[in-house]
Length: 290
Image (cartoon, rainbow, N blue to C red):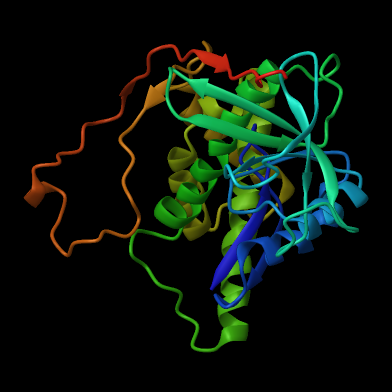
């Protein structure tokens, strides 16, 4: 099964989702979510760029900020004052400008002198949408990965497969997990609003455990008991709240599929625990003006 979601970076809430078989690609499923993205700035990784997806989202009234490979929209057609440039993204199989292409803005930058990262956006005005702001905003896309971890690791449980024995029931079970996660995020948002803090400062795992205990005890059956439930949850969660800003953290990244059957520890590649992250320097990579 393949699931693609439209996720809020600030709250981890799933706004919409497309659920289907693994034979469908992520870009095809993402196109189905375009009507729900009206008025939003949608951030995607480099597996999504395409003319069909671009037209679907911009046509629905959404803006895009997508990472792309070096071969996508590679030929500048106009340089902008801030060093970014306009380029064409053609239909698949077309190497030159042809009917059906789209014109977009390309932003190139480096983080701490690393690889050059390329972003594609339909926000063409460099004065109104500075390249540095968009580059700093792109890293927020990883908040969606935290949302997936909440569903797949904490809520569903590690290495737990879906119980349904048919494709239709498997899709229904996936939707059930998404709905439960959305309800939990709504509770977190209410707690955060009451404490006037960022929703990120509230532990999803602690809320999940308390809700599970409450459901088993059947305490949430009336409006009055729901109020008592929220008050109790707020007091329990409030014990570990941190009103300060979230500390930047970093963790080692590993490939999902290993080329070897042996574990990382067998190779001597020990994982380090999550630790404080140093400040990152974003350096714009200006185009070479002719």
